[in-house]
Length: 291
Image 1 (cartoon, rainbow, N blue to C red):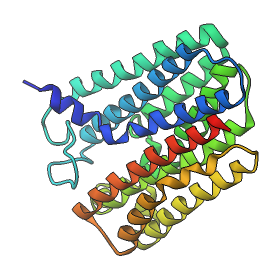
Image 2: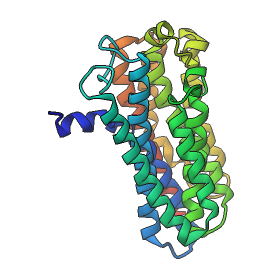
Image 3: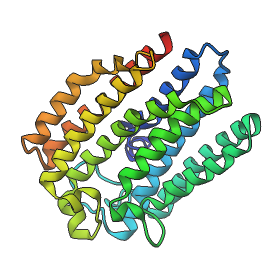
């Protein structure tokens, strides 16, 4: 009988900061505007982001598992389907359940703010499933980082602010850049760790396409670019550069990557990268909210 602990592990809790941070930053932008904030909308937006992240994780587990991309020899946490821990159909329905939760919460916001949010919601759900699912998954063609940057960076951050202010705020779009880059760095760490297995199974991630050395340099560039973007956002007078408090974690992660950490040695790097996203993201949100 599958335990709750197994399902929690399958949801990949280390990745959930990718749902939390853009909502926190988007909410901070709205608060900084001095407008009255409907906090229940922020809470529902958080439900959407977190449920979407969990849904994508389960969908990825299911699709990779049935394709044979994940198996018992993979490095890192075991996948539910690939390791045989859970039947594929159950993981698929878990993905549908999480994505359905995101859709239901999004519908509440659409009914309150505007039905144009339905279009964004449909695009998010479709992109989440097509990442590794469907006949031509774009995650297998090196486009996963594009999806993560757009939907867990720009869309999630600016979308949260839109839900609260009922208008597009360009500062939120600008702040979505570092948020998206932190999410990209998390995916790049995963793909660098799995580069050999993905190449052998025909999964042409960006890391496989770039190769080991260039992926490491790209990881460094993404980290550097994220903090540069916060400095640009600070030109508006809002203290987005407060994100620098997470820089020590970034320095530690980049050093390990550039020194050639691979396989199991990249698992601690994944933890550091998640801390970069969480600490820098929340610090940036705090800085924006109070200035």
